[in-house]
Amino acid sequence: MSAPLLAVENVGRRFGGFVALDGVTAQFEPNKVTSIIGPNGAGKSTFFNVLSGVLTPSTGSIRFKGQNLTGTRQHKFVHLGIARSYQITNIFPELSAHENVRVAAQAARSRYNIWRNRSHFPELGERADAALDSVGLGGKHNETAKFLAHGQQRALEIAIALVSDPEVLLLDEPTAGMGPEETKDMVALLEKLARDRTILLVEHKMKMILGLSDRILVLHHGRLIADGSPRDIQADPDVRRVYLGQNDGYA
Amino acid sequence: MERDMTVKSIPLAATSSGARKATDLAAALTNWRVLLSIAALCLLPWVLPSKALAVNVLVYGVLAMGYNLLFGYTGLLSFGHAAFFGAGAYITGIAIGQFGVPWYGAVLLGIIGGGLLALAIGALSIRTRGIYFSMVTLALAQLVYHVALQASSWTGGENGLRGFTVAKIDIAGFSINFLDPVSKYYVLMVFAALALWFVSRILNSPFGAAIEAIRENETRARTCGYDVERTKLISFVLSGLICALAGTMSALHLAFVPLDVLHYQTSGMIVMMTLLGGASSFFGPFVGALAFLLMEDVFSLWTSHWQIIVGSIFILFVLFLPKGIWGTFLARVVR
Image 1 (cartoon, rainbow over the protein chains, first blue to last red):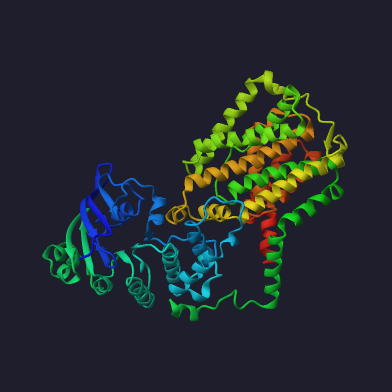
Image 2 (image 1 turned 60 degrees about the vertical axis):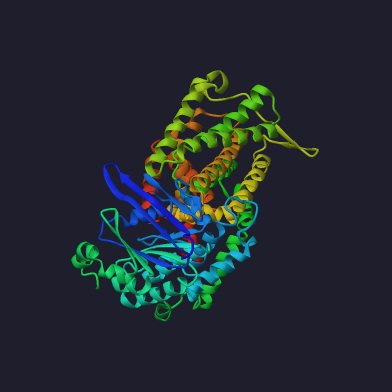
């Protein structure tokens, strides 16, 4: 077992009186795919928001490569090596696909310079091209993002996250709203990415999760109720009771 | 996803020659926007009914352009930009009239003062969003208005600031008669040209890409690693600097600063000019300023309630031509 890249300890988050996340402890090793599942309202999105700095945890701590990230401002996460996508497609709608990714790459290189031209950093454009090609958007570089098909927009968002060359990629329902064909393409893409990246995935499509994941965490009412291999999780009686049984999960 | 690519055609790769020409024209307009804008503005005094109107287009065009950097390109609707315009105007007037500072020093002080005020107002307002941001900027600008109203020994209070006429401008041995409308126009044109260059500089830069990203999607920009608050504040200050420059131009032009420059109606007028011409288009604010001032000139001859007509036209624009005059022209004719 290699050393954990990312570790959360006793992480909790409350909103007023509501406890969305309750003392979750977990460690994530490099180059593994971990899926986080659970019924709606289980705390999956809160967990992701805490891991990516969108929310500061009310309790506990997050460590990344030994560094304590608790309370670090959100925009710094990607520079440290943690990038994410959102459940609802989150792109720059009026910009071209290429500029969507280029401006994301630019954030690591130049954020406040007004004396240079954007074109002074040609490597950013090249990296954007490569990222777009890698998610299957090769022919769409100049298309305005809002005119892309839904599945292509989801892929674009992954390209935006990928261009920062993150060590950890947090993907919040990357196949949300996708048909079977688009889902298949996305799974192929995730399999490719999983070879040399640590991926955390929130998903509802059980077949996809079971095939793709090295490990599954199950959240229920903000608590971690199971943590293990897909096989263990399928056999876990608690999980069957709270999740798989009630949700027709094998759809 | 690769499957989808074959299903949907790719418009840009399959452009007809006509569309190609239009794209070239759009690219040319963008690449040469500073020189084209300067050329257009240089012709202005000779096509407009009066030289005074031309100077006003210059002043308010620079003002709206500065505002557009924040509103059109960063996506922040400030209702308090009269404060920076007024600060530039008052500081320039006070520096010349009460401290005997030469005109160029007074202009510099006006710009710096407006920029510092923008830093203060920006720092207080930038963390609020949407309507709250608009309201905070409005409230803080009202504060500036009332300070100027009360500090009448400095500002002349309700009567406005007088007594700082700039009669001639000496540059490199030349003495330019600033009372001559044409000379005055072209001196102020130099300031406008610098502002045009500066704004174009910003828009071409990595910072320009960052503010556009924030306008498009603040959450995504933050996730990509941009410090959204800091970037917005810098944009706010740059915008304030340009609006303050417009204020100093106005002071030099009129040799008078009316208290109205700080009034919230001025803030509203800036928004209207920007939207009329076309927010987030480079030359739009000048077109908007021209349209607004022309309408004011024409309609105020007919009726003292000219604002009803201008307001109605403005509403029609917002409803049916949200890209404004210049933005619609670019979208329909060029693309």
